[in-house]
Image 1 (cartoon, rainbow, N blue to C red):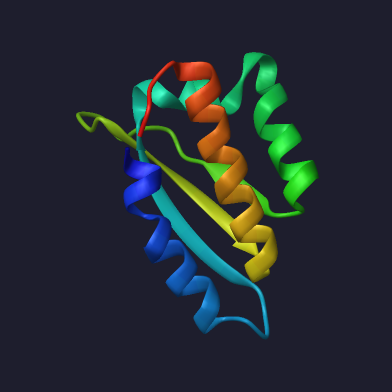
Image 2: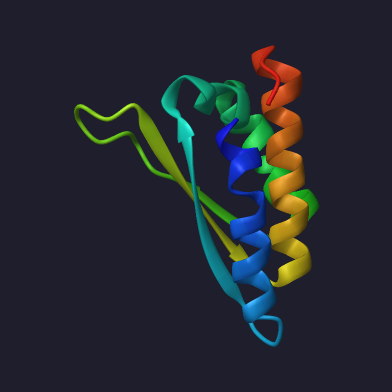
Length: 97
């Protein structure tokens, strides 16, 4: 849900930075973080390796229902990471967006 709605935002940010690295942030409901991180961090490590992007997932702030994911890299790396993160949510959370 949140990842899809921010898809255009991510692509827009990365297009502006085509010649160098870019950083984008995506907010996700904190209950979906486990579907992205995986047991012992296995899924997020796989996404990092496959995309080549740097990915950081912040803890939810007290009282907030969202966590912020920061993705850094080139346009292709960010696009690949974004797609892989969407796949993780679809496959492991059982939620469609």
